[in-house]
Amino acid sequence: MRLAFIILAHKNPDQLLQLLQRLSHPSVDCYVHLDAKADIAAYHASTQLSQVYFVPARVKVNWAGFSIVRATLNGMEVALSSRRKYVNICLLSGMDYPLRPIAEIIEFFTIHQGKEFLDIMPEQEVLDTISKLDQYHYEDFHFRGKYFMTRWVNRLMPVRKLPLGYKHWGGSAWWSLSEECVRYCLDFVQAHPNFLTYYKYTWGGDEFIFQTIIMNSPEWKSKVVRDNLRYIDWSAKKPSPKTLMPEDVPNMVASGKFFARKFDITQSPDILQQVDQRIALMGQL
Image 1 (cartoon, rainbow, N blue to C red):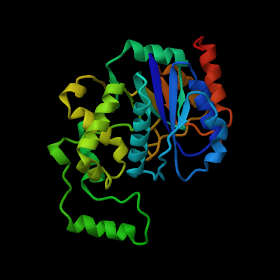
Image 2: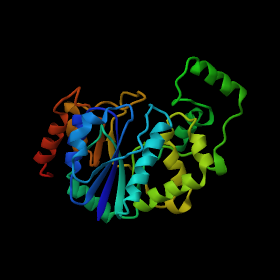
Image 3: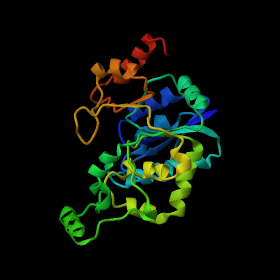
Image 4: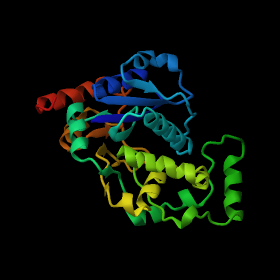
């Protein structure tokens, strides 16, 4: 069975290269969306790798903007257009790294076919952050007076309502879904363009849109495993997770998770090698 990775990358060409090399396997295809703000020439080595495909429709990605959703959808479309049969499609960032050998990851998803590995936020947490969704946000727009205008728009306009009477769901933006579920999500947004329009004016919509589509479908909701198999450290309680450092390696490798984020080799140049060495010491590589 084949496995696909959609990778959203925006910086650190050497780090992306290491990630792609670590994921390399005859049964794996990688689809890389490179932020349109990045110079693709710096990623030449990655473009030459076998079974690595760069998404042609590149988007300028803005943090917390709908552009992240658009980049993800573009990657999904390219992966599905390959007409290869995937047992699972995993969404990663270019700052992620696997914590298990790729053969073991393929075996796991083959055994657990039909399961959707998706982080699901507690309902109260969604309610506590509802202003990200039911107010207008313009994270992909850059103009003078934007925040002043946003405040006035939200004072004057009624609370925004999610189309179709759907309930809001949320969770981590990073998931591992069956090909069939990915196709369902794509078909859904194509059939309901007003749904995409709604999320264009949210804050961090990538942490809500796929959970909302999947969890409002009884069929797909029943297949969800509420675990996205990612090791992510939110202990600093900041908008972004902690950048993982050498002292974090023992805990992440022992966590039982399949992927960790986030890493930055400009802050810790040999961190990915340390992860590999730790896995090797455990007899897993």
